[in-house]
Amino acid sequence: MLFRFFLASLIAASCFAAEVEITSKRYDGDDKSGVSKFSGNVKVVKEGDTIYSDTLFVYFDAARKPIRFEAVGNASFVMLQEGNKTYKGRAKSITYYPNQKEYLLVGDAFVEYVEEKRKVFGDRIFVNDTTKKATVVGEEGGKPAKFIFFVEDKNSTKKTK
Image (spheres, rainbow, N blue to C red):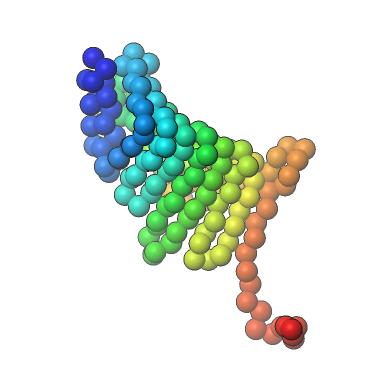
């Protein structure tokens, strides 16, 4: 029965939109709850996206389609987007909602837009891949949200040493 759930989980994940490959040291599936747990050096690859973590939970709906991927512990990612754009990031947890193409990074979150040399820091970072909108929230009573970027100033009179 466990093997049947595991096989159904992988088929559902790969048929959802694109092939999803998950590797880890251990797999635990629960057919009744619709949750699969991968632990130990977890790596998730879907097209140009890769997520790494200590533990990954995959939640399935009644039709066995993945509705949420939750990476916990040393969670990081690399995304390759249209136009050769590379995004890298990390957080205490990274949750991906495939139906909405949304990412939620929580806890000491960081995203770098590599080619554009832009960096975003916050307690929570929300990114929608469809709308290309992002929201960054700082810690309540703690560190603020921070955005770092470079501006080329052609009129600058400042001399470098």
